[in-house]
Amino acid sequence: MAKDKTVYSCTECGGSSPKWQGKCPHCGAWNTLIEGVAEAPAATRNRFASLAPASEVAVLADIEAAEVPRTPTGIGELDRVLGGGIVEGGVVLIGGDPGIGKSTLLLQALDGLQRSALPTLYVTGEESGAQVALRSRRLGLEQSQVKVLAEIQLEKILATIAAQQPAVAVIDSIQTVYSDQLTSAPGSVAQVRECAAHLTRAAKSGGTTIVLVGHVTKEGALAGPRVLEHMVDTVLYFEGDTHSSFRLVRAIKNRFGAVNEIGVFAMTEKGLKGVANPSAIFLSQHSEPVPGSCVLVTLEGTRPMLVEIQALVDSGGPSPRRLSVGLDRDRLAMLLAVLHRHAGVACMDQDVFVNAVGGVRISEPAADLAVMLAIASSLRGRALPKGFLAFGEVGLAGEVRPAPRGQERLREAAKLGFSVAIVPKANAPKPGARGAAREMEGLTIHPVERIEEALEVVRGLA
Image 1 (cartoon, helix red, strand yellow):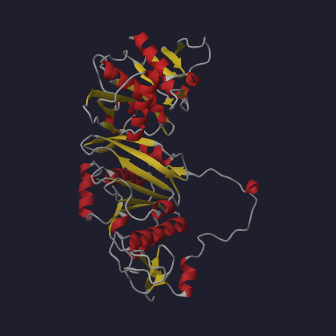
Image 2 (spheres, rainbow, N blue to C red):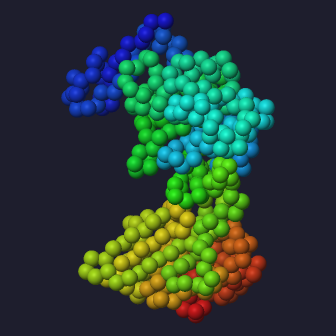
């Protein structure tokens, strides 16, 4: 088969050039030409042919909607993030920092699937087969029957997948794979896009579940073209500090399940193990309550988790610092302004440091109330009561807004033995007089409507 010609397309105007140039000959834009493949008309028809028989136009209500069958991997936390397991023909992209545990987790998952009588294939482009075997020995998988292919050429990988017909194939990593149809180096935008597109078509046409391992940039985003995330069905991010034994796998996109689900793992000598009670990771063990600490019930996907928010307020001089770890820094500045304006707690000459314990990242606004109470506790040097927690969004007018699924958060806190909670009025159990404390499975709940009211309740509890 004749090799396709290379063409360079402009990302601005869509024009093409037979050779690379710094300036587009059509629109005059600089550094916009991207390498691609120019095929003959017959090849073009075959290459972009439909993966399924052509269908006719149908009314949405008449289309039969069936549940997508799933195959569990045997790793409960990974199945939670995937929405219950892998899907036939699905394409999963997983990214994370080097050494975070991506290859370890996938090798464990492949071994579990293989022991369930599913054919598997591990394609390694960054390590030799001997290195993969050495890792499997360290993980206690000496008798693993997972098939391994050390290859980076796309055409050979596709031929092996077609010949072996695995149920699940892992490509580690997509940045090392290259196609003979392109002249650019492996890892370039054109190579990553073209190879991912071919592998996605192979998954959809052959029914093989393909897992692509992706590199990340220094900012933590997936390296390569953004279209890579649009091509695949599921995008997972591996998070965590390499100096800590705990890891988080977060679903950013999932066409077959809920997004923003997380799986919590602990790195052990035998690989990654799921953590049954992740709240224990994010709660510090204090023998007695300390100033500047407040427990928050956050929601990650469908899972309520308890996280400790720590704040340190100290004299900062004429240029005070505002630093947050695991929380939005801009939102911290806004909360400090609301705290001053509506509650009379001034921090304009103080350094304010806020941290979410355990390396977890909290993006939901329901953390506002816990952050503000922790800051006020640190500033006044008074610890919050033992067994205390809070959650709720705080607006610019000082009002405390309800958080989604508040009853589930409260039940999780009561299950773990917490005794006092300050929550938005709308999230509190309905019975009882306005402003009065309410009981829920041993948890005393104080509903509030404004931030100054929450601080007044805290002073009364102290």
